[in-house]
Each structure stands twice: as C-alpha cells, then as structure tokens.
Length: 91
Image (cartoon, rainbow, N blue to C red; front, side, top):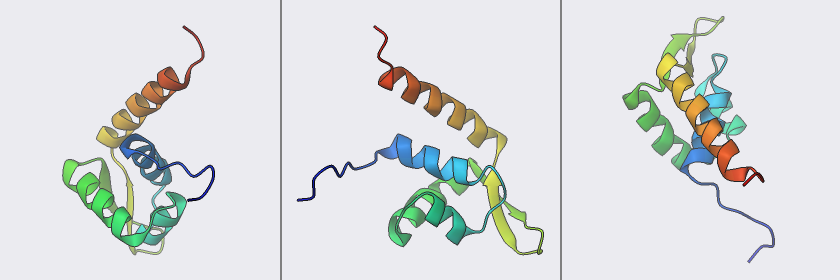
C-alpha cells in the first residue's frame, strides 16, 4: 500500500468537476482537470448532466463544450463552505 494516498470522496470530486467547468470545457479537459479516470468521470459527469449541475454549450470553435449551470454554482458554493467548516481549526 502506498504511503499518504487518500481517496477523494463525493464532495471533493464534485468540487473538482464543477470548478473545471467554470469556463466552457470539452469533456476530456474536465476529466484531466478533475484528475479522474474515464469510468469514474463518466459516472459522475452523466449524473451531473441529468441533475442539471452542468450544461451543454458550444465552444468558441463551435464544438460541444460543458459549463457549470446556476444550479451547479449553488452546489459548488455550498460544498466549498461545508469543506471550509469541516477543515476549520476553530472550535
């Protein structure tokens, strides 16, 4: 087993994907920015599209891109606040 390897949970992966879509991106770019393998990325991304956190759009080259929706931005704010509260040293 490797030393300091930590598995990322749903919240962290969700934040990574949503942050990657703050500007319109192609799927592969989002996958790389979120540091996910193909299977795991597709599982999350398909769910985010269905739930309306990410929406399909056209890039500057006219090709299909994806960007965060207003609903996704709301989720991102909530998750980042929760992450901040959990990792806070204040008691």
